[in-house]
Image (cartoon, one colour):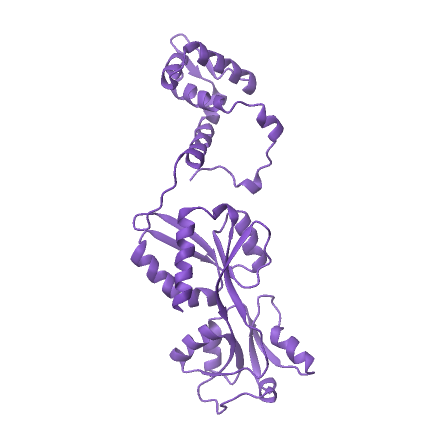
Length: 313
């Protein structure tokens, strides 16, 4: 991995850059490495006069001698030595980006992927995805980042993460989206709750636990109830999905949870799932990536694994 900054952080002066012959970077790299016009010319298979001409042009561009003569041979100047690593890395990046054909073999590849997803997404897709990774790509690593929608897309644009998995993301034109699955909500109560169905009156009379990423006590159900001139009593608000089943199992509260995570937790904790007494709109979970990663083989492979994981749930 090079130390070249991400594109979004670099202001490129294209007008001045066009005046520079990028072939001079190759000459500069070899001149610094060999500290000799003759040896540099031999390495590039050009005449010594051509290399001398390139050195002359480089001295004008950089306003530096680059090579200076000593009593015995030529020596690299401090400036040339200072920029040598950077120049070599730039050439390496150009070579890998433009000249080398990308390959990706899951069984032997070593790569880290950074995915922005909630604990609900991680729980729902994580089991299948983890099984696929360990069986197909033992050296691939995944780091899950729990970011809100806006921060996750900013991180995606700045190349700090590789993929966002969420619903209803405010996408820009350079973002690519592919749907994974659709989800509905169910009401969840503890196992010994006597109710077999939930009326609107019973629903609003019970204390409620809410998942909210906005640091408040309002959710989509509140807007629906407001239209019916009803109000529920939310006494606990959290940005995390996974503590809620445990809170419900040990209280008389009710909550709305995505069906898949509710089904999984109901088996473990013996929770009871009931149909919501109001029409709460479901949501579609999608994966989103920056268009720069559309054709990267490793990213294509990861997205395929996520599609397969979504089919398994």
